[in-house]
Image (cartoon, rainbow, N blue to C red; front, side):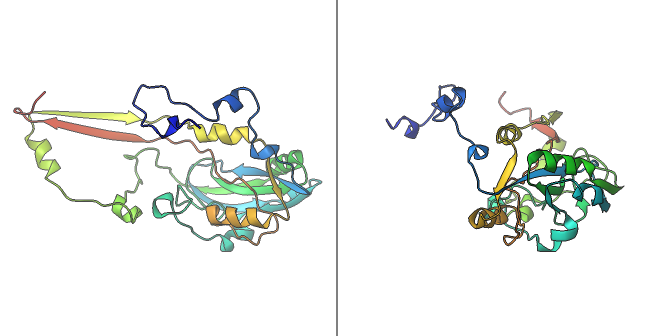
Length: 253
């Protein structure tokens, strides 16, 4: 390497991407390109409601699909799912939501079952045959929605400090000019596109190291005979933030 990557990159300047050539020429290799001995394919079943609880999972028809190895739900591995650390605390999780850890549904598209089968087609077919019932609750679609709860950042992460500086409310109340604006984030993110590029989820039944690594990322038991390699859900991210700004008469424009 010529050391160019070690140089500070300024905003607006072209930045080299070391994996760019491999990707645009089709030479990049993904996890699904790695051949495994005696593989098991996994297919995710996701929640049809935005908030609530799972009341019943009828998996008889799904288990009768030829080639199905197992179906993981909160009913058979929930007690074994352990909470692990967030990124902010030196762990690997980006959310406190633990897939298959309980019957609670926190968002639409949450993983509620993982079907393991000898072929991808069998896993997909069985997942579509699952019959899942819910006790639906009213979801909180934005920060201002009824039922939405807030938690201080310092309580959510041990690495965050929440210093008390000044009196923001008094500044707004006494300001000559105030601006109150709402912004909404997009409901897509690039990580979902990257996961789709991985293709079917494949694991090796004898891959102990992979199971141990995945367990530390998801909280799923490392001694599971068949555990899916990929567990992240591509749930939409939608949040509306209210932004306020104030300027005193003497403040510079």
